[in-house]
Image (cartoon, rainbow, N blue to C red):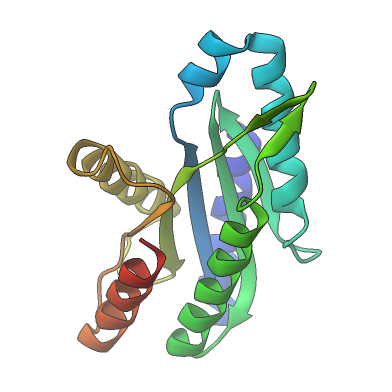
Length: 178
């Protein structure tokens, strides 16, 4: 987790200087405890490995993927562009690709295991005062999302401030993905 935080800080500071937008995505697998309880922890570990492999398929060279705890992954998408609305489109396309990667179940030891998740998304830099605000905001949004929509699959949570147009674009993305 510390390596991820260090990378996020580096990317954030560089984005301020270079005026490039980046995105931070936080993935939380849904009902992962059930996989461990129903199958076993060895199967659960294999599922996590497969999730990481699938996520790596959509990354570019400078992007950062990390498993940060149990069933949580984070992804930093680097240098996406200088036009925020174009960056939002790129992130939307990437999320669609990620969802497609998990349309098919994960096959582990002869069992087909359906993997669903929640994704928190934050395009930055925006109005945050430091890279820590990015993490904090996403964690808050995901916690609220889990409480409000525990029966939804593959939901996307936005953690955006700023212009109303960008907010509406993310809301359209969220509605489309849910």
